[in-house]
Amino acid sequence: MSFLFSLLADRAGVASRAELVGAGVRATDVDRAVRSGQILRVRRGWFALATAEPDVVAAVRVGGALTCISALRQYGVWVPRETAVHVAVPANASRLRLDGNPTIHWSGPPRAMSSSVAPIADALAVMAVCQPREATLIAIDWSLNHRVVSADLMREAFAASPEYARKLRRLADRRHDSGLETMACSRLRGLGIRFRVQVHVPGVGRVDVLIGECLVLELDGREFHSRTLDFDNDRRRDLLLTAAGYIVLRVSYRQVTEQWDEIERVILSIVRRQGHMRPRTRSGR
Image 1 (cartoon, rainbow, N blue to C red):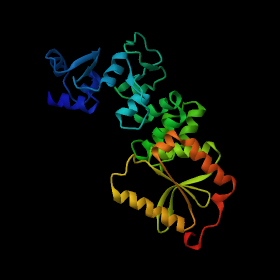
Image 2 (image 1 turned 180 degrees about the vertical axis):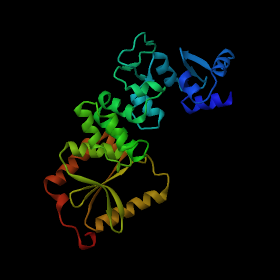
Image 3 (image 1 turned 90 degrees about the vertical axis):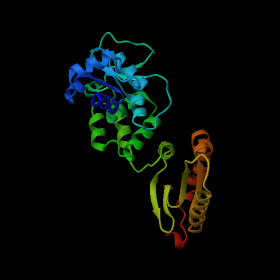
Image 4 (image 1 turned 45 degrees about the vertical axis):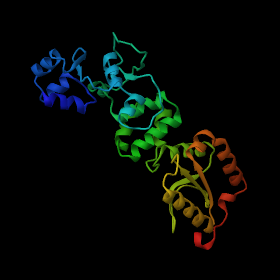
């Protein structure tokens, strides 16, 4: 029985009889565990631990697999907060149980139906046609940066997506090491401003975003500097960059998410007067 429980735990607590038997569990053991109350029958041919993730159980009970932001949240990907459960179902699905008002995605990839949670690449492809552009880019960049999905799998999953979704995939950049960086760069791109990310500056190290030749945008994702060493190191880097002829704009998470208009005005004022292209001092070359 322990093997059965272990297999279920590895599958977010929910699996089909076909999955369990295919992995070596005897069908009689599955039936015995149901009769004893050790596992629950979610729907015909599907079973769950009592401790299974509620969203996964809900998706299987509907008649499909968890997808979009609901699936990505299970994988630890940064996604917007939303209470609705997103479920992928086959195009010919019928007799769905719609308790709790789930969000149904009728075009769920067939391979997503073989498990209780869609693969990350498939969930990202669904997110691209369901959620806001910026949030989707953040999720894609995060997934690539953390190597939880490959570019090849992404390309395959997005192959049948609308052109605007495939464009989002092509904009993906695994160098973005935070959602905040993706957010800021997406907005700079929308302004038509050219930039580079994770640029190495001799004597300083990598800077988050370099606009033109000398305008540095540093994104402080930490909500609070609990370590004096971090705070001091950031200021030391700013001093070194300034001494080398760079203009440094260090902004916080809150400023990017809630006060972007102010950041945008400052950046545009510098760009319009070509301040971002001015020659740096010799030590900054």
